[in-house]
Length: 527
Image (tube, rainbow, N blue to C red):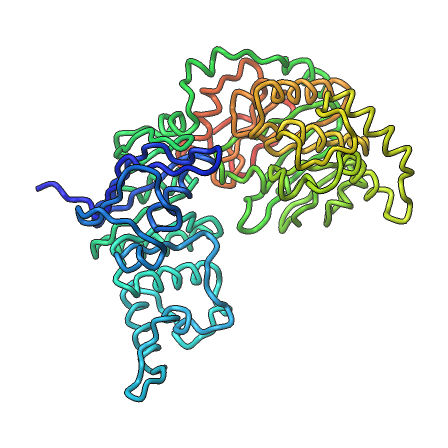
């Protein structure tokens, strides 16, 4: 007899002003199954979770629990129906005990109306035993590592007789042993009939733990699949959203040999050896030569941004070393990176890039002013000349240096950010998703600008989720997967199928994920 889903979403849509975040999405969650929700950034995964748990109201479609249509007014209604969520950032109180966190807001009462702390601890002990977690309920949560705190969050979720458990990126900060322990707990919950919605960007983990997959792309349903019937490379195709044949029709505008032939005896401008950060990215080797564009390819969560932040001093490394022009250095801060003429344009343009209330002129002058020091003010006339020259060179619109950044289009905001970093005459420019969310015309202009800068000797690390874009402008491509560098490929007749194969390759085969490029003769530490 076929199983009946506990939860079923049919044609669910969610809209915000000017944006349709979900468009007719279906999802089925069955008892005793792990169902992975897959999709790149912006696919609609978070919106779907919030629609299911009552955070967002739906514009269309239906949500059924046990066959009965429901309309949750909030998270409390969803929890009352047995649907609980554990988010990537554990929402617990480290200054309370494990038991206090698990039972917070639902503490058993004594005969005279006060909290029965003995029953709080004993009930927590029962729940911990249920999933096989051996810790003291009376211990402070802050005493435990992130993995245990994650398990405590799960124990709190199941304390209300959870029938559906949503795990949003639960392994993002866990090491391999901790992931194994989490999966053991998930297996226990499966055996008890709990339906688990698992969101992760780690393909190896998804294929290890999943009974069923649903893929979203740009707010729409791509399909529901059984893992054994869907090859990893096909899953990547469905997530990214373009057919392989379409990708392979694209032609690169850069010939890798133009740069590589001149690198045989050249010293790299920047060389990372075993550079890594615990919980963020495994030790990685990477060379970037003068005038070279190194593309970084990989799915969301593969470690792309984490690598960029290590190369530019935003985050400090725990392992390895970084050499600039052959001299080992430690970039403790972005300011120190700027002293080595290394600049970073973050993917979070709105929160880590533009200052919306300031003008185009102010935003362009910002990095140069920081480099000079705040006691050596750039004269207003010099700021105006600087802004005018970049507005003209980069066709920034409106061509008014006093226009506020918040009123510019995404493409023009990105151009201003590039102008800000170019004003300090960088030697290495690290660009994290520089064309995300901008129109095709602005995207083409930025790609051409990056290519022109490279031809004039600027080194570039270019990160993009769009593989065809990486291939179009990169001399060499480093492929990341699950926080490891799995391939370093020269862009000689390199196709998107080559990148997809490296991204989707199972971990057991990573030893042959890609031969090192001629310009990077060392083996990857994980290749």
